[in-house]
Image 1: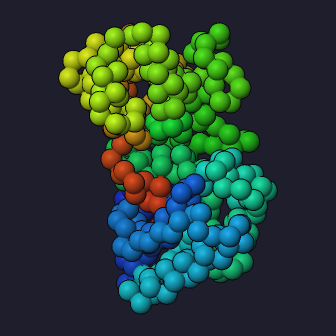
Image 2: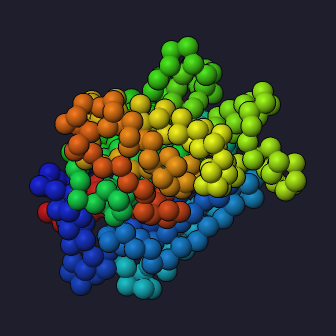
Length: 350
């Protein structure tokens, strides 16, 4: 069930927060962030505050059955801890990598966790925990978290991106997480900005991820250095016994290295080109950038903003703010909990 229409994001937030102590009972949701390395869980109240948290390593479980058993045991324990602390658990929200059939709660597959093809995760968890369950893509729930509780507060239309090894994205349109009829929306990383450009991991050429994703960024830096580009990075790599990372390139840029400054400027311009197109199509109020690449601050935000101002229609460029994400590592589990609040919680609040 979709959330009720409200006049602003703040109105939607107030609707969620009004659940907190209705009838003298504190309300909460269990948010679960499934990653390739670990699974994080949190008991989250309708203000986005994490009252209890835990995690376990994904690789320490034998196959799908082992991971499911461990996940169910953690959810049950969280439910008991919540009851002892006076919370009523409204449900469980799951943020998971890869393609998800949101309506059915079906995992088509996990990119970095084998054995999960066509898994009816919602049905399994509801049967074993006796709680309502919602499942969505991890980048989408990050967008929902920032919309309700983070950098997107006060807006109705938000684009949220995680800039890491690749690019994940989520769209909140008119206060609702937009997934599309096939639940494949918001693949911002695969907007093509150069038809004959770099080969992307998806098989196409010229995707923005092939220019902005961390893996592609490092590949390009290495290629240019190998061709003889002059940079302080060459001596650092020889003498420091360190790996080439985006952070190292950022450090060089901040020390005035022309090569590093140029490659960060180009990276921001590529991302800005894609975002300028989205501004023209969606006219968002905010674009929220999170993840490791975005952590390099003005090195990427500066050229992104300048490119949007240059390439988007003036009215769209003037009305959008490009801001850093606020919730950090908690965005996944808080956003997963927000799935529960926005689907079940606001219905109770009306």
